[in-house]
Amino acid sequence: MDPRGSIRARHARHAARALGAALALTLTAGACTGTPGGGGTLRVVASFYPLAEAARQVGGDLVTVSDLTPAGAEPHDLELRPSDLRRLRRADLVLSLGRGFQPAVEDAIASLPDRSRAVDLLAGLPIVDSDPHLWLDPALMGRIAGRIAGELARRLPSGRAAFDARAAAWRARLDPLDADYRRTLAVCERRDLFVTHASFGYLAARYDLNQVAIAGLSPEAEPSPRRLAEVSRLARERGATTIFYERLVSARVAQAVARAAGARTALLDPIEGLTREHRTAGDGFLSVMRRNLAAIGAALGCKGAA
Ligand SMILES: [Zn+2]
Image (cartoon, rainbow, N blue to C red):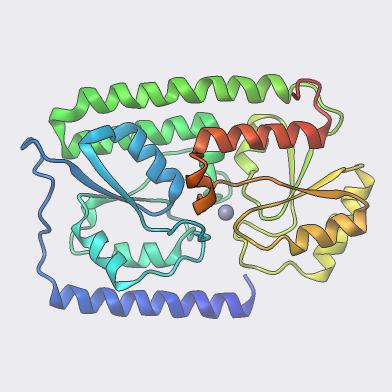
């Protein structure tokens, strides 16, 4: 993270902390819950899109899910508004990923009077190098759904069978996706995936690809000229045809590397959020994952690509 970014992040953390403290004084505790067992619904707040999608899939009509990250916003450096903090306090269940993925969310959760309502879904999952981008591996997305089913059932025991069944149904849609990735990416001319920020580590590990990221785990940090030169040289050496950019952050660095390496750019979506256009088109996790597969298959010259 560059100094400017870290100052901004710190500032956001302080602001969130101050707001949290103010709200703690002015709001009464004990938000009205979805009356577990009383026929109501559980109020779930997810910190960004993939968790909201998983919660909706698993919770069905027994939950109302809201997403803290607005459509089209980049979740890593999300800053919270007072209305977001009120939503957090009223939630029966708050779902997020820890390890510094969304520092403002972590700070706001730390200021909640009842932290037992908040669940860090990274706990208990096979995290590598503090990388939070688990959802891009369909098998790990299935495990996230399983954990959400357990957390919902603890808060609404009468819904347990429904949550388990819905989590199984979501996994039954993720399994064919995984199979398609496996089949399409089995035999390729190249296996190096040149991406903007390091969000495809789990996907690369699952399908035996090698992620080369221009930036680190967070898209906030500007890569140095030296890093740009290094990745450009590697792209040229490995015969990369495509440097991937992503939707929610600038394509500028991908374009610079592509120009230097004689490659083109293409979109690969880390599905950190949906834009309004996605929503208008009826897109969701599965459809974007399938477009990603087509883009990777084409870029790497995979035999199984459509
Ligand atoms: Zn990311």
